[in-house]
Length: 247
Length: 357
Image 1 (tube, rainbow over the protein chains, first blue to last red):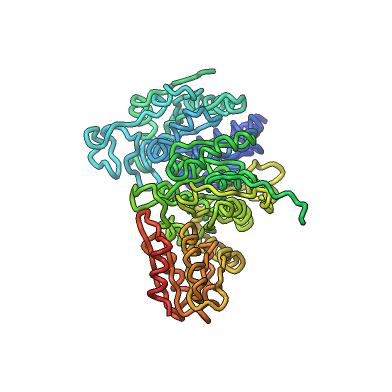
Image 2 (tube, each protein chain N blue to C red):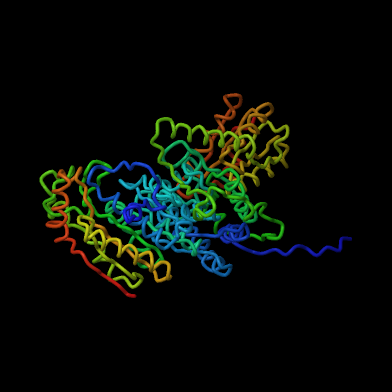
């Protein structure tokens, strides 16, 4: 009796297999977003902006209106959609390269303008789509296709901490860093994403949820080791928690 | 004697006329970034758009502005951005995305001297960029080149209509002279044809009483991207057939034709007028659409015209399209100034005298 209800597929997800690798966190985050949109009953009002990166095909997996965006420009695209259709619910779904390297200017300025948008920022520490190059969020010492001896701060720079940076901006309402490496943290992730959408529904302003997520393929680890890596390494450099909550 | 009151005329700059044309064409969204010599347009839009309850945004970069335009167009809104040469270079990726996603939009380039940071003097050095693609991939924009302030307003309205009709981005290609000079404009003469009335079922407004839909240019399935390209080329072929515009000044029976567009066409016109008065069988062809280029009109003129002189404020860009249209039937000559120089009437008349036979 209960199982039927628990295993229902969210209406906001399409019934297709995804292209994501085994152990990838994107599938979990996609589902959480879909569940939250169903729970708010806003599927028919949503316009999502998909990034360039692994989640580029998100428009095939979500059952609501979704547009693509040039690499890094999701928040410029989303700004105009929301400004011209303020009654719609607009969110971006972006990776670390998209949001924190090529799109840094768009991220900072959309946040600073206090656009009434929801941002789902998936941080897996690598450029996965292109073969595992160093991301702005790659940890010191982490080996990638372009830091083969490990990221070295002296020549490769330091991991970029987006929420810590955005927290000082007056336009920002809500910032929380979560993770999808354990069932407990998945529940917390859903709570944070729900809050971020709720803020937009109430017209409060710019909300971003950063989700630490596994990329077993391009961090060269088993799924189990990837989960441990997030718990033991990544969330040390990127501490989980609320960075801003102006509500 | 006629009793009609003369129509009211407004004295405005080309930049303002483009803005007013956009507002009257029902432009819902404008984003821009400061760059000379188009700043008056952004400033004009900042108050006119908000006065009308529409969206004006000063973006953090030209890149952001064109992607905001992409977003507004995704929502089915009429959207415009403007810039000048270096800023237009920054927008090229976004324009390619607009073209690939079949999204209408209007982009204004008030050209300045280049390459590089160049200067802020008028130029026509971005003709290739505007008419041949500019960004990556096989695509075209509709490119309209006004020759006066009033025409700048009228063509801006036309740009919105054409862009919506064909779902192809349109560019107003003008320069620092036309952008900044003032002329009287009879605003009431112009009415945009279809402002706000074109249905856009492809727009993303939420999956209400219809299935979810997406706007994208990533087409990975074998053959899918080729199919998109074939569809695009069909649209471009239709535009080429139907939408080329030009002004022919004394071209009938002319044995010598001067070809020029934009502000330099006015200097050329003065030269043609003066030489006509001296009995020379000379005419001026002024392309109004640079893409589609009025190649059939040119081809017809080769029956009488033995020589063409193309005059540009560049090293010679449109001259290549003239050569392609003429196909060797007549001589094609070129006179140009670069880096912000403008050919004088005297310079043009001397060159014509040298070539005219």
